[in-house]
Image 1 (cartoon, rainbow, N blue to C red):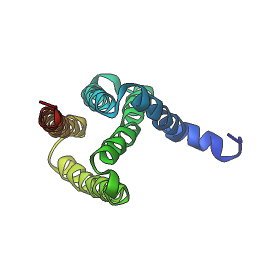
Image 2: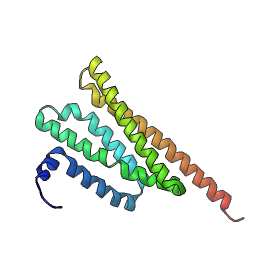
Image 3: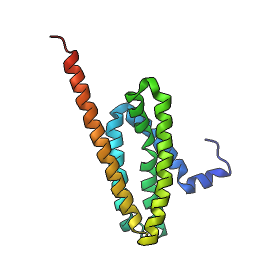
Length: 162
């Protein structure tokens, strides 16, 4: 990486460690599989959000809390895209595009929800609500994982000789 004027800005913004986390996630997905990594990342995000109130007691703690959460948040896309490629290999471009659109929509809705939470409650409610939504995403992920595993088992039994 060429060091320039933007390097301090990138380092302070948390983008560089997040980018490195995303790049490292590809190696983890190749080694352990997308499902394991995505499940672990969703758990990491949930725990980091629930720990916000304990860690972010001052500015330094806030940097740590956001940094721990941000690294995990940037790790979501690689295993999610690997799962999409596995599920729809003949429509990979469309699947990835739709996933990207869903991510942008989710980000937009999160901004609105965050504003509504700040209007009605204390800012400390934000990570708690976000953790709840992450748990909901983990439940959807678990249901999809179990349904896919059941389908693969049925296909193996159906395709078995005999």
